[in-house]
Length: 77
Image (cartoon, rainbow, N blue to C red; front, side):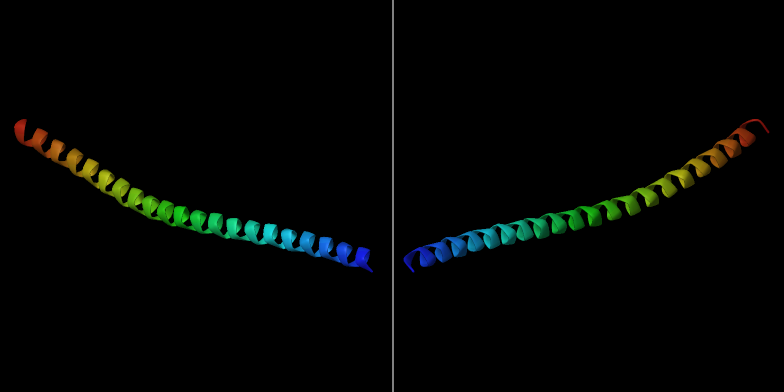
């Protein structure tokens, strides 16, 4: 009977440790997932800003080209 109790206590200790490890793994997974989500949100915001800036740059280039042609036209009229 004593051997059976010791055996069950060992089994219980193993199961408890195993569950603690699984909980720790799940907590780490959730932490990493949240961090990835935050980084993804930052990336999306940065990409949107980059797109807006690229559009603005292209508009400015077009304006510069038009103004350059206009000034050239005025100077050599």
